[in-house]
Image 1 (cartoon, rainbow, N blue to C red):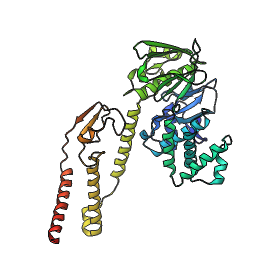
Image 2: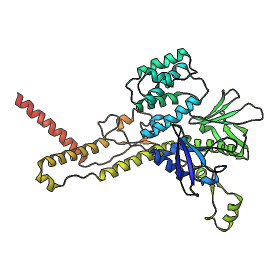
Image 3: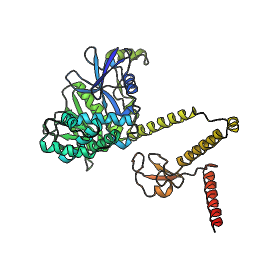
Image 4: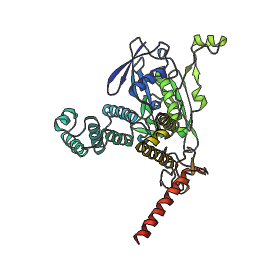
Length: 444
């Protein structure tokens, strides 16, 4: 079966997959084509029967989710907007930038002129390189005022020489400083018509009125219970005084209600939890046919999983770092080091071999040094994230993990014996000090 996926910037890719392929198979194929490793931040989006924007469930068969007939078209875009410093790969940052750029250009909300000037200048620098008057006039917006256009051009000129990757990263930081950015909006109705939309994002939920103004912000820690039935979605929230408040929300279609339910639950698990609860991971439904089959054979009946999130933001970051570390280790296994016999026949190669071994030892020593002071040995584990990155002295001066920015609740001292590694470093330092003393005595 053929699937067409629109990737940014607005190019269409064609993929051939078996008829019974699941959403994960298609996402794997897209990410492999785009060379994106951090695929947990991305998803495939399509339009529902009434134009609703729905996310493809990676754990279910594609054919059972998409409405209409072939050819099927989907959009590859960022699903979970995380802080730029958590993105490891340059390709991930690039496609995150393209998603944010498109959303920013399509967003009708007016932003602060000064910040909008910086963002537009960074977009132009990242997309077209250094300032050129003819190119700028060609790509500047026609609806910009003359004053705003001159301000963007002046700021654009100051970015001359900035690399594309640097411009994209700086632009991402500007995007994520916008208060209303990175949220997915769902149109809803209530009995009192007070709430007209619910925005789901990295910091929680926002209830908005008909003008788009936020009337209430709710952190994920305040969510108590959520459930849905047909086109109705109920959400129970814990107030600041400990009392419970229930929102009964109605949406246009059952598909949109399922998407709102998924968006709230998956974002709560991804951003607000330390790990994905098994209740969320294992929740599923069956249609009538599969329900009948399940009475006779549990394994042959097909389960339609409600959610497809399987990692939290911290787990994704740790997983990617482990994957990249393993790839680095595997690639280093194929490096050939000259044998001792070859060194005996060629003194130059022998010297290179010794230098290579010294470099490897230096790398090992650096790996066990505190990543803050780069002087003392790592001897402290940060809890709850579990990262082992600093010494006891530096650990006492920080309250957030320098890798994942998680609040530190406890610091556990770790004693690890590393024979020969730091001993060798100490001997080298002693030898160097001894040589300095000998040179000083000769000079006297």
